Length: 312
Image (cartoon, rainbow, N blue to C red; front, side, top):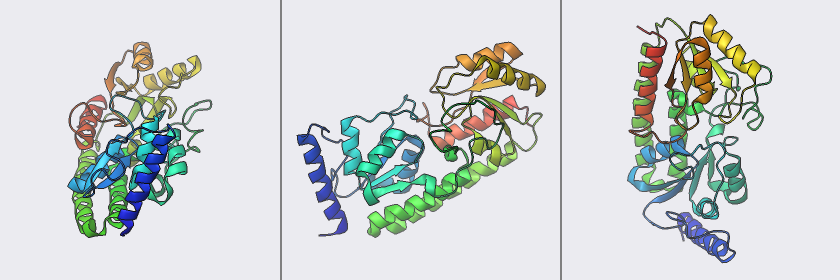
C-alpha cells in the first residue's frame, strides 16, 4: 500500500467515524472521492486560486470560505470539519481564521501547509500609520498582518512552496506542479512590474481605506495606508478615530476613500462626506471576484489606485 493509499484509507475511516458520531455529513470532494487527483482543502480564495493554478487537473480543490462571505470570522459546519479530516493537503494561513486553525490543529496532522510560515509576516502597521486604540485582528494574529497575497512577489514564493508540498503528496506529478508554479511566477512577476510602473509617478501616495488590509501592497509599492479601522473589517471606529482619519485625508488632499467588496461601505461614506471625497472599491481579494480571478482583480485594483492617486 502506498502512502497516498494509506492516507485515503485513514481518511475514509475518519469520515465514517465522524458520520456515525453525528459530527459530519458526506464530504463533497473529500476523502478519496477521486483516486486520480489530490484532495486539497483551501481555507479561502487566494489559497484556492494558488492550489488550482499549480495543481491543474491533478487536484480537486475545496474552499472552506464560500463566495460572498467574509472569510475572517468563518465558522465551520460539521461537513467542512470532515473535509479537513479527509483532505490529503490543507492549505491555510494561521492566525487569519480561528475556526480553521482549530480544525487543522485537531485534524490536520502532517497534511497541513501553513503559508504564514513561508516568509515572515509584516507587522500590522506596515505600509501605513498605527494609531493607539485601533482594535481589530491584530490581537488575534499576534500583531501580524495576514494579507500577504496582495504582494504578488510573496504570493509567487508561496506558490513555489505549495508546488513542493503537492509534489511530496504526489511524486509522480511533482515536475508538473513545479512547472505550473514557475508559469504562475512569470504571471505574478508581470503583475508586479505593472504595479511598479503604474504607481511610479503619482500626485499622492496616501491610500485611505476602510480597514487596513493593504499593508503588503503599500509597503511593496511605496504607498502609505491610512486605515479607518484595524485589520478586522467588522470593527467599529470611535468618533475620535473618524475625526483623525478625516483630518489626515484633508491634509493629504485625498480625493477617494476606499471600501471593500464584502463589507458595508457606510464607514467609508461617512469619512468621504466629511472631507468632500468620493468612494471607490479597493478589493482585498479575500473572496473570489465577481468576474475573473486574482490576477484580473489585482489589475482592476491597480487601475482604481492610478485614478485615485492621479498617477501618470
